[in-house]
Image 1 (spheres, rainbow, N blue to C red):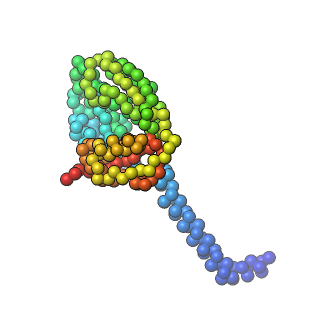
Image 2: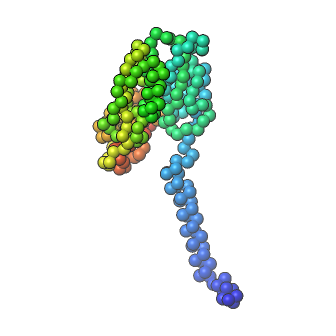
Image 3: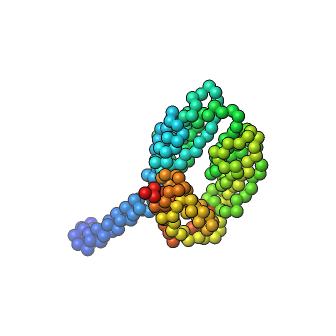
Length: 246
């Protein structure tokens, strides 16, 4: 037994085979750990939420947008708090979030005569109804959306739109997602299109989209993910990177 083992150790083909095996193992490890797994887990793709406390909403929204995130204004109407600046943000500053995440910025207007309709898209139906009622508004109807969406039972559309100033007691209609559709769609190329036109075009194909970067829909789409030609299910979300036309 010992002699056979010593003979094996002196065999050059044994060491060549062992070297090839080690190389294969190393290649598989690197491929899985650094190429395949990041695609599925999206490890490392996170943006720290900037600190915009005390800034005007327009200034705060610009900073949020330049960070690759989205902002939404939540209005308070309190006479004893600082007015027209951000007094709260959620998630808090420094918190790591995915690109395109919505950051809620609370601004105190001090105006108690009208109500600003809150933005409730992409949140659960129950939470959306609570936010609307807390503002002194009513729920007119909750309807299933005809266009599929990634997250079932979350709000996909609302009327009146977020940010509109209305009378207290105004009724709000909500549409919600039934989840992804069963049919597959080939992702088209929308690079070079105006962001608003790209979003409308994708909706006609029963695909949804989210803007990354500057959030004005008058900007040009400079990149997209998934890439054109990718097969996805109806309702899948296409990320659109935007830039100024100039």
